[in-house]
Length: 317
Image 1 (cartoon, rainbow, N blue to C red):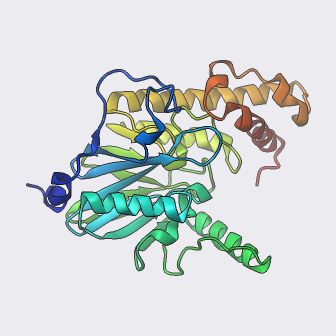
Image 2 (cartoon, rainbow, N blue to C red):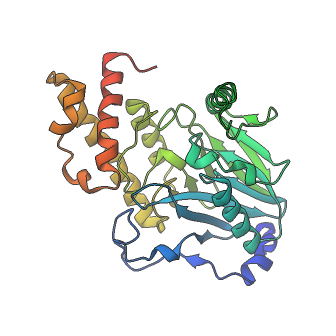
Image 3 (spheres, helix red, strand yellow):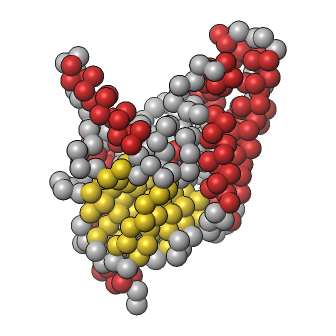
């Protein structure tokens, strides 16, 4: 019995977690179209020995999941990303307690956006945070600006958070885990978590499963290169930061589908830019093809156009 299996055996015995479905599923981020009920969430999914994802709803009019990864070891639990509020992240913490009595010791901030960090105060005091330097600077500045304006300051990383600008290998309970920066993508500091033994790659917002490419703070052409690097790792399972957890083969197909969606969206925005269409008119002329039906297409399409225009014009910071 492995150290990690032993660490989680007690919790696994008293919790019937959801195993990845084997029958074909509807390829969508919408739970209703997928044949599920809103009451099915939040849910914990066992994807390998003592490796789990946790899915809860993303706030907003369109329903899709915000997804976390957690790994149980004999030395404690590593969690990748939180949820978007203190109550939602508390739900994640409580779900982990149902799986294992082992404490949460390490939290990887894979995306600095509020839907992945705003609830971090619900993680236990004293946990080790791992974050990209760019993301830490963004969160620090945001908290300070809010405080000066007299607004709620939000969550701020502790001063002793560990910075990862490229790669960091950590070992917990004899298990190796790699924290990777694959390049600027959805944000300037996206991190991924790679489990080499299981070949599981948690990509956070580098990969949005059947969710229209969201580019509010993105680097479009660099994002494509990050996806190239992720696919070159030949993971057995790719885990998205938004959208459902998929079985191995489906996850491999879906990251390729997302890559195609990114390429198509950038190409269409580029076509409009080169045709001289003003940015404020481009959204009404864009032809997203099959991706027009993806979750958030109506709200994220215009944002994607603006971001691609910024990059092509040299105005992207």
